[in-house]
Amino acid sequence: MKKTDTAILVKPAKRLESFVISRDGVYAENLSGTGSAIARDGVYAENLSGTGSAISRDGVYAASQPGTYAAANSEQLIKEAQALRFRVFGKEMGAKLKTESEGLDYDEVDSYCDHLIVYDNAEKKIVGYTRLLNQDQAECLGRFYSQSEFHLDQVLALPGRFLEIGRTCVDPDYRGSTVLTTLWSSLVQYALEGQFNYLIGCASITPGPNGFAVTEVYRNIDAKNIAPSSLQVTPSIAVPDELRCERDESGIPPLLKAYFRFGATVCGEPCWDEDFNCMDLFMLLPLNQLQARYSKHYMRNYISRDGVYAASLPETGATTSRDDTHTASVQEAMNGAGW
Image (cartoon, rainbow, N blue to C red; front, side, top):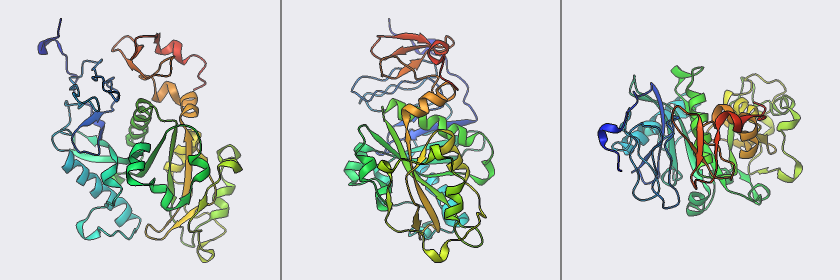
């Protein structure tokens, strides 16, 4: 028997909500821990948590309605995100942006990407953002963004699917809050639902008063976070000698620290990005390593025993795989995870 509208309970909107706007600007995917399933294989997406999320009819994205205007205003939201990027990278970091006259940061990569947004429902503003370029989208574009800075042949030879993140930024007024945690949690959920094997991207380090402390940065990285020689990348432009210094005057950025906490590795020497006035480190994060270390916190709604994502059922803590093969409690699935 089909549920009537009156039988669907809609939860109050959270202050911080996260969602993804797809590259076609049409569908928005709610990633705020609501339990909504996302169909990527031509099967309809089914809401499992009583949030009122809509069901996609094209087998691609489910559009969540409560607490956001994402589905109806996706183009405007993308521009707001690009304005946040401009404030952070252009104004704060001093990047030389070709789109400066518009007060926006965008490039040719944007139209191929999905856009992950953290939105403050109380203040009605975007407070966190990252750009998502998956393997299929990169093939349409002809490259990953990172390939403009690094030679990635050895990394991209790894078996599995890649998801690149970039332009990650948080509104200055929200730093030190839960925005970065919300962003990472949503990113992990997106990566799992897309069945990606690796996260890749560039972590930027801005200069101190005297330049870039390349040697000191490497000295402060734990050996376990340095990739083996078989996965080393080569920067297209090395940090110029005249910009290098001996002392680290800026410290390790929060985003890079987050990468390390999750088990990411630095794959070689940094690339000098003159336009953004920073040096970029290429990062590689295997998703299976992230799942082993942080699954209880970031993946509690998406666990299965058959390699297929599971959607959390409300109030029960139970998980059900999308092929109805396995069911397990979250706690049982997490026993021995080591988090």
